[in-house]
Image 1 (cartoon, rainbow, N blue to C red):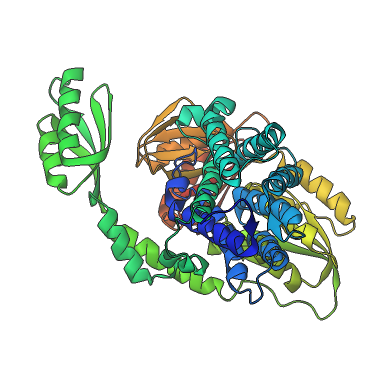
Image 2: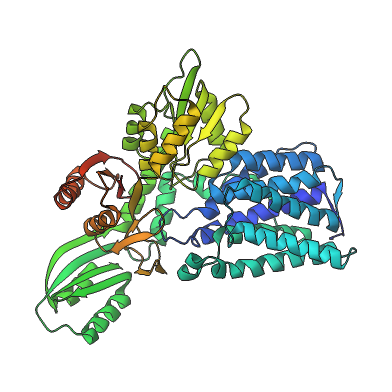
Length: 560
């Protein structure tokens, strides 16, 4: 039975219910990411963040509003991952600042706590952007204040309902605030995650929750053995063979013929890409019977560059590799701390054994495994800081989605001088370390590093996980994309031409160096072929080829 106040016990149940609802919707939220890359992670980051707080709440022996507030604030701050997770942790931190000194939450206190939550979150972001989780949170908080002013005796149920209604209304307006959301046809993923937390909390307030004990457990799918995950992934793949080829046309091929061919391919598969260019047709399709696609294609001409990959087998191998990486992560890659404290130390986020070797060779003291595929938490950063025996430590996040977590770790560190150089890509991180000068002060070095990384352009090649339209480009699931610093630069069906086009859009008149880092799915021979082609196209530039070993991204290319 709901009342007009919320005590510590009910508040905890509402929090756990909100966390569970977010966890249940995390994959759906992940799919709302604007770029259709295979590592869209807003839902995952927000879930891992709130679950860190859930773990502390469920461990409480003496549940009071004060102990609950401290557990939520501490757990979410230390467990925060990615920008969305950090902002969620700041919203929770602000909320708990108000409620911790109360024995019960009234509608007036609820309104005040929402206002403090928004104020705290906005302060934590250097350049707040509207059309995001921040805007959704502010919409709900403003509505709570309006309601209280209109009716000081408003019921708790009405206030909660209205906060959610306004939050959802603002969420649906986010595409009008951020053109990139409108073009991609999605609402803000972080805002959607926050809305699911609120909706879950409301269910608990109304007594609708079922069993929330599982909310305190780590996500079950992440705890599954690699074999089980691989089998589950294989079950979800509807069409098992990625089939590609080029038709050398020998008969008349009209737009009507192409439409008929596409219709046939749609009847036997999905992820279809058919591109005709004068006397050739490039074809990409996922199907369970590649032979049928090939037989139909042969009626139009001869075939070349045929390639058939078993996607279920590839999924299986990728999951196994991911489990091996997780096992390796249990023993962090780091150098032993020196016996005496030194003046300067470096922490860098890195993914891929080749990139890790590069950072180690450049003198980085501690490597945190992570990046696009898994954003490290504030806790990971704090653990790294503890391991580096230096008075001053420079952290290189190497990903725009990790910078806030690094800054949060800085704010929580009192005994060392932490400087976060806001590197957004691995090449920027490498450039930052190369430009370190021991004779300069930490602040002088940070200034030089920021100036140098601003000259670095980065393009990363991966595949699309869904159909979308963004940056004036029509993208189909399975397409290869060259993702630049601010937009998608190139799209196509083959890795090599997309890599060349991506590089071409990054090279300018002042470009002197082109660096190529090839991933775990690319052979050295393939990478050398790309290097040779780029060297031939840009003889005035130095072209460096490095083994990166990064997952998901076939190539990382940088120019400076």
